[in-house]
Length: 522
Image (cartoon, rainbow, N blue to C red; front, side, top):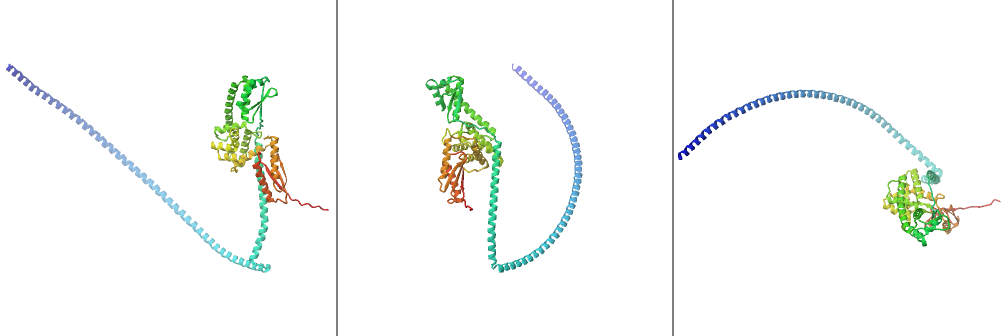
């Protein structure tokens, strides 16, 4: 058993040794093959590298030769360019030298001429000094002779002469001043008349006089009973809701809507017309129609204000101001429609501003907004001037507009051409015949009050209100009132009229002082 084991182990050892040597032999043979292959590849790479090196050397040689050629060419061009510049510089230097020589010659000639003039001036000065000395001697001799002849010293004669010249010149100066004052006044009046004529002739507007009542036509008198309603419920609802008086009398097929507020009166008239067309006249329907008409009027006045602003081309304006402009259609002053008056003032102010070189758009804007406060007087306390200025300031209107609002009622001085144009246009619009309508009692009261104010002044003989109360003619006693006092009296009367009397436009105070000397030839 042991022998078998030993025999098997020996066999295995022998086999392993034999296998080792065989494997080593095979590995040695492969290594030689790999070595040969690597050597061959190295030789190939060496040959390729040598070839590339040769090519690089040839390329470098070509580039070097090309560079040498370019360098030589550039060097040649640079030399030629330098030569040309040197030639040009030499030519410029030669031209400069010639110019310098010419200028030096010219300066030399001018210096010689100046020296000659200087010598002549010195001679003339010496000659003038000599003549002046001779003149002074002659003047002294003449003065001594005049002193001897007149029996006065030189100073006394000079003073006497100056006084006579001053006395004579004063009359001439006064005459010249008076003449220029008259010319300036005439020219100013002529220019003002021209501007007013241009403005009035180029503007043609439509004017309407608003009454206190509106007439609503009915198809038949049976509708009057339906408008009154059972126990007067319908007419009471109408008057309470709309704030107007509805007058139903014996006038056939008609009823009257009465109110001092044009806006409320217009809404009431439209509401009645729609109710009559609808036929259902009862309190609930009245309120429904009234609300609908009120909303339509609010939209309408804003739309109308926008159209007017665009038509006049006065720029961008706040919607609240445009709404108030539209509301002016339903406001009247002295029987004159406020919107018609406002448009007339805007157009006239624009034309006047154009004639005087002002801003036309700004003048129209100021004219359009000068009475904007009248749209608020029915709903707010205060006068229309303060209300208008306040709302225009609130919406950042131009100071010219604010000044026009105050100035057209004399509360501020006129500070610009545009403001002056608005004030003139406002007075022109108010004074136009037929523009305004007043009741007889108020007219008589105003005229009487103006005459009474003038008559109470000391030294007044007679006082007459003429031209529909727009002028007061005051005749004073010439022995009691002199010229200066008559001017002061005119100012006092005008001031008192402003404080005590309400009137449209302006009142001219004309104080007449006349002195007469009467004698008879027999």
